[in-house]
Length: 158
Image (tube, rainbow, N blue to C red):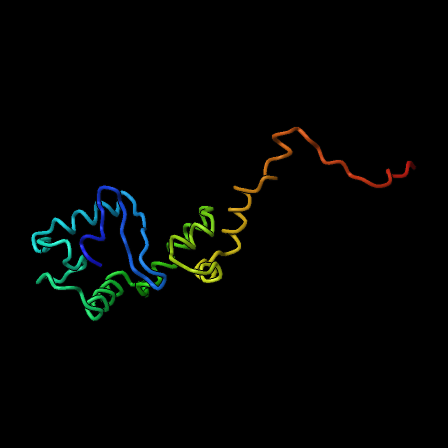
C-alpha cells in the first residue's frame, strides 16, 4: 500500500486484494489514528509512491516486522490473535449490528457470498438479538392492538 492509497479527507483507502483494487471506507477514529501516524516525525511522506506502512528508516514494513509487532501485542495484551482475526472480528461485529451480508461481501472484497459467510461467527444469542431487533413481526401485537385468539373447539361446559 502506498501513501497515495490513503485519502484522509474522504476517509477512504484503496486496497489491493485477491479480487483486485477496491475502495474501503474507514471511520473518524481510524482517520485520527492514521493522521497521527502520517504526522510522526519519522514518517517519510516525500513522495505519494512511498510505502504507507513504514519502518523507522522509511522503508516498507516487511512481513517479519508485522510478525514481531503481533508478538509484542500478544505479550502485552495476553490475547492470542493474528492480523487476519481482526478482519473476522470486524465482519462478525458488523453482521451482529445488522449490516447486510451483501454489503459485507463487497466491503471485504469477496467474490462469493459463501466466503463472507465463513467470516461471520454469530452465536445463538447474537442471532436472537438481531432477530428481535429487525424482524417485521417484532412488536406487531403491541403496535396494532391485535390479539391472538386460540382456534379450535371451545372448552366443554361442565
